[in-house]
Image (cartoon, rainbow, N blue to C red; front, top):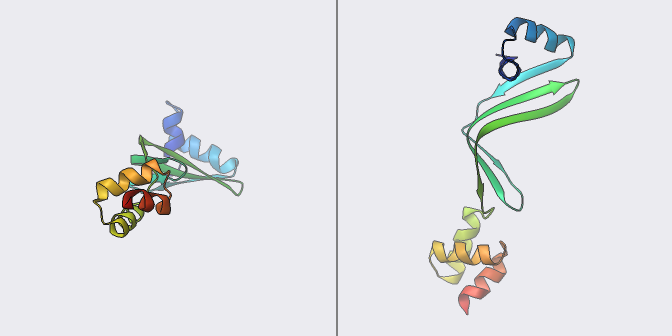
Length: 114
């Protein structure tokens, strides 16, 4: 299936010609099966139903991801459970406290214990 992603980007291009051109340029393309892609940073970006391609061009790997993107809070379920257990509050209250404290577990627990 190599070449399929770039062929979609260039409508009307013959897939065999595209594959030949890619080989001449030292490009290899691989489709990566995925059900969800999460990009972690200050805010998480969650991509549902992604189409992921790994492109290797002369040793340089890049990834092309398309899909339905949404932002998450960046706060893990484990952090919510830790705060909920330590402060003896609901997971919803723990999530809210973590969001208000920018993900700082200690600050969230102290805030909930007051």
